[in-house]
Structure formats: structure tokens, C-alpha cells
Length: 316
Image (cartoon, rainbow, N blue to C red; front, side, top):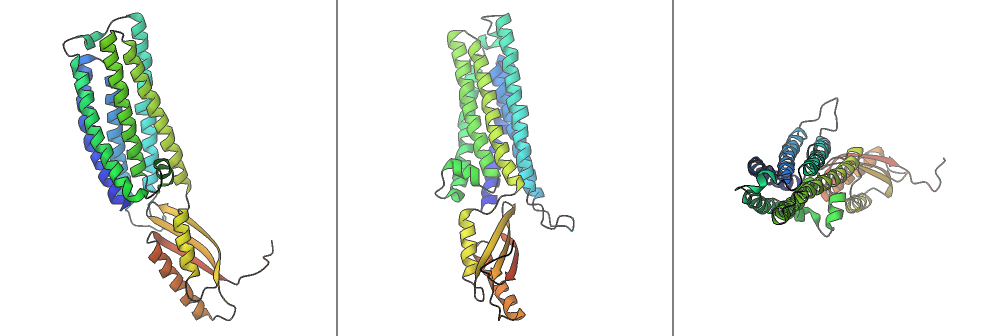
């Protein structure tokens, strides 16, 4: 479900951002607004990011090989990390550079609005308004798909704990896009009203800062996934209960879990059996426990259960 919902949200964002980028570039060509250029590059970066997410999802479906026995599920994390880098460099740093460049132009030619003062003054306002509408539909799709997996978690908790990277990435990108469009609209609008081009510069700078902050958040969260995260506390409780409730098992000594990918979980546990059990009894108990684990959590694709005797004292 998370994969399907993530793909739907990515495709919706890709279609929206491609159309938005073209209209923004047209508006920049007519007005030379730095806010419009920053927003156009932002949309190009977002479109490229969505293509990267789709590519990562496709590569993650490759079959396991002897060299990669646990499969390629983490490809999705790698491409999500690249998305953060692209958003930081192509989106954020470019917008900050454009704001710096435009600021120097304003000081060199104070009061000069350039082509923004011509007959096309209304174009950026119309484009930004239309872009906000289109981006809102993309954001709505991301919210709807995320709600299917979010449960009772708050939005910050969902972004922080989600194992599938696509939905948090699209959520943060769409949120940044809407805020960036708002900054651009304010910057262009105030420039037209006050005849002071510095507001266009401020709008561009705010867009750059916003994109850098979102990129850093994405990088931090994706880095955690790349390093390897355990199953959620809820999933661990379900797996623990399944093991302890299986016939032939006295209890769970200890357990470790690791996400091999968003929908692939490795479970390694040491289970307690009785000293009088035969090898056949132990093998049967392990088979039953594995079946119980997969029933409560289908993502548990790789399971290693080690039988042992429960000891009151374990030598160091």
C-alpha cells in the first residue's frame, strides 16, 4: 500500500511540476523577475527529483543476486538522498545566488523594475496563482495517500518514522513549493505596488533559505534510513508476541530487526526452548514461529531464529 500510494503521489507531483516549470520560465522571459527564475529552477529541480524517486522504485524491484543476497530495496533510500542533494544545490543554492546577484543589480540601478514594469506586469501574478492551484492538488494527493499509512501519528512523526521515503519527500517538496510560491507572490506583488525591486530580491532569498532547510531535513531523515533502521515499536511488539505465542517456544531471549528496504524487514532473534526437546521439535517450533511472524508482519521477508536454553546467568 505504501509503495502504490507513494508512486501515485510522485506521478501527480511530476505532472504538476513539469507544467508549472514551463509556465514559470515563460513568465521569467517576459518579466525578468528573479523570484520567477528561482521558482522556475525550483520546479525543474522538483521534476527531476520525482524522476529520481520513480527510478529508485524501479531499481529496488530487482531480484537478489549472490553479490547482493538481500536484494536492492535500499535503492529507494539512495535515490531519496540524491533528491535532497539536488534540492539543496540546484534549488536552494541557485536561488540564494540569484538573490545575491539581483541585490547587486538593485544597488547599481535603484528603482529599476526592468521588464517587470512593462505591459507583462500581470503575467507573474497569474502564473503564480495558477501554480499555487496546481501545487495544491499535488499536495492534496500526497496528504491523502499519506493518511492511509500515517494512522494516529502526527505529521512530524510520520516524516521522521516512515520507512518508505517517497511520501515524506513529496510532502516536504510540495509544502516547500507552496511556501516558495507564496514568497514569490509576495515579492513580485510588493515590488509592483511599492515600485521597490528589493522585495523581489527578498522573495528570492526566502525561497533559497526555504529549499536549503527542507533539503537538510530530507538528508538527515534519509541518512538514518541508509544507515539502517529497526522496525517500528508497534511492529516489534507484534513480532515479539507472535514468537512468544508460538507452540514449542518458552520465550524470547533477545531480538533485532533491520529494514532492508521500505517493505522488507530482517528479523534475527534468539528463542528459548526446553532442554528435553528433540531436534525435530525445535525445527517444528522454529517453522511455526516464522509463520506466525510473517502473519503479523508480511514485510518480514528474512527471518533467522536461533534456539537456545534460557539461562539465569550468562557468562561475560
